[in-house]
Amino acid sequence: MAKKDRTDRQAVIDSIRNKQKSADKRRGFAIVGVCVTIALVIIGAAAYQPIKDWYDLRSFDSLGLDSIGASADDCQEITTKKATGEQQHVDPGTPIPYEDAPPAFGTHYNVWDTIDRKLYTTTDRPDVGELVHNLEHGYTILWYDKTVADSDSMMDDLRGIASKFDDNANYRNKFKAVPWTSEDGEAFPGKQHVAMTHWSVGGEGATSAEKQVGVFQYCSAPSGAALEDFMKKYPYTDAPEPDAI
Image (cartoon, rainbow, N blue to C red; front, top):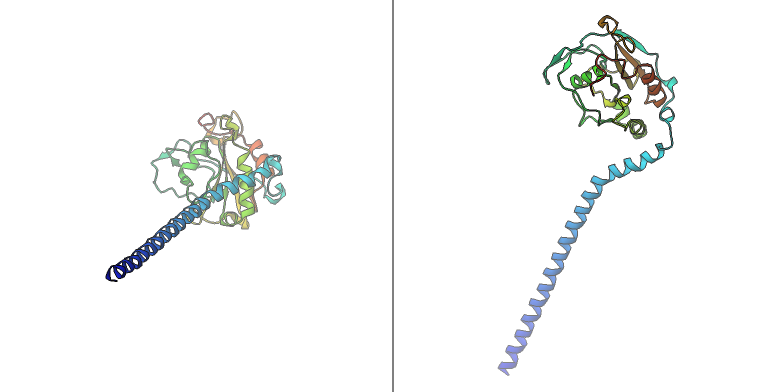
């Protein structure tokens, strides 16, 4: 009888151990499942925006630049201002008090951004002093404010506009769309939310510094039509140093 009792007790102990092992295994699987789910969520979140941007851009494939965004009528008249600052270089980080919001010319950093990138956000935009050097090299810069940055539809338009300048071998694609923030300077005049600027030598082939002007055009929203007209009137060749990339 004693032997049977020991056998029964051992069977009970073995059963409890087996149940515990099964429970531990289930908990292990559950933990792994939760970790995998969290990892998939993180990966999905990281991939969502690039995939969405790619999908949204497909709608612009068949559109010309002049068909993207607002009408050119939503922009004010082009204005100019005598330009100074050619070859006036300072080290990155040097404070430069630009008078205009945004600048189209002036003293600038001794470095500039490459042609590769067309659209920036507040988290990765080059410094203003660097971008002014781009202006000296013939770039047209479209600056956009927080109103545009907070609008999904207007940012989609900007992505569509930027996609039309993807041929980096063509210097006529010297274009960048960048944010303008309250830390950079005053708000755009007249409750406008977009500004296009260019550093002109006064026409292609002009050499006199006296003819140099900063060119400005403000718009209520991104306008591919206005940008196209602006860049045709003021091409990259109409700049102090157009041959530098």
